[in-house]
Amino acid sequence: MSKFNFEQIGKSVEALLKAMTFFSKIGILTGGICVLGYFLRIGHFPQGLTIGDGLLFMLTAVCFGIIYVLFVVSLVSLGVVMSPVSKGLTKLYIWLYKFRKTRPPSQVYDFAKFSLEYFIFAIFAVLFILVLGRDNSSAYWNLPILSIAMYFFYSSFISAGAKIRNLEFAENSLFKIEEYGDLAQAKIKKLRKAQMLSLGLILIMPILLGGVTGQLLDGAMRQANIRIESATIFVKEPYASLVPSVKRSKTQPLAMQYVKFDGILILSKGIGNMTVLYLADGKSKKRLEVPNDQLIVN
Image (cartoon, rainbow, N blue to C red; front, top):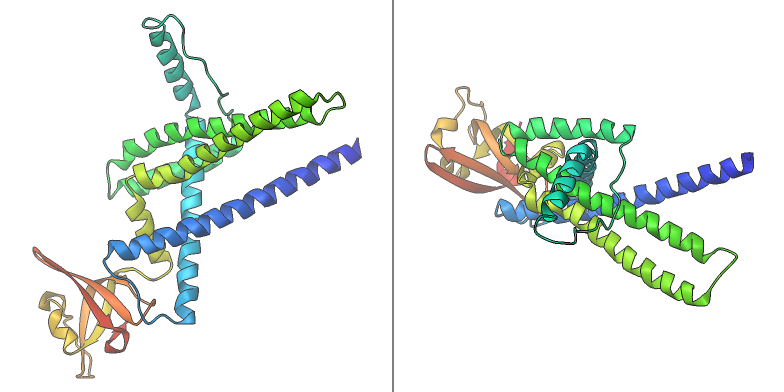
């Protein structure tokens, strides 16, 4: 019995390590793509990159990847916690469908069951919704609805995995039938494709439908200290004359070659040889690229 328990623990640990490795790779890949998307969004692509800049870029990608994976996992968990609503809506749909069709639709997968760990991660989803909703009120209703949709695909992923395990167990049993083995392999292949499709949709839905990708990117950039919402900077001429005078600090430095400005939004610093400033003066808004050796960020 103890041997069996140790084997089960070993398999569980191995599965956990594989899952962590997989999601780490997915997180870094997603993070890298989204960081590139951030620079496209602000209309700037870093130039004059060094090895240190490359490491910072990787750190930023990892930072966003971690945030995004946590965001996805928390939304799926919220969907699981809200599963009674999802199941109720599904039953209502089937019940209404019966009035129009003689044959009701069949449920091709089992719903993912609730457990305590889902509730823990669902708390993070609530925090995400509350924080993101302060700047984008649509997050209050959009993200809960999105979590329900993601729950359906997660259920499909889990259900397909259970069917694959059952088919593999039957295929590896003592009483093998060659024809059954070929049929089982065909079904397993089909189920794995369904799994990958479900997983891909789970990962991409928050980007396409969440409406908060920009906020997540901004948050990741702040954590990596690439984006600063309100910075004090010292700028040399002629670039200082391009910054709105309303941003000039009341206290100016003794070094006459620099002009001090307060409350400046920095879109990008530390990657490449340019620092990107976002300048707003009433209705006038512009983006200013300043060489790193022409300014100091306090």
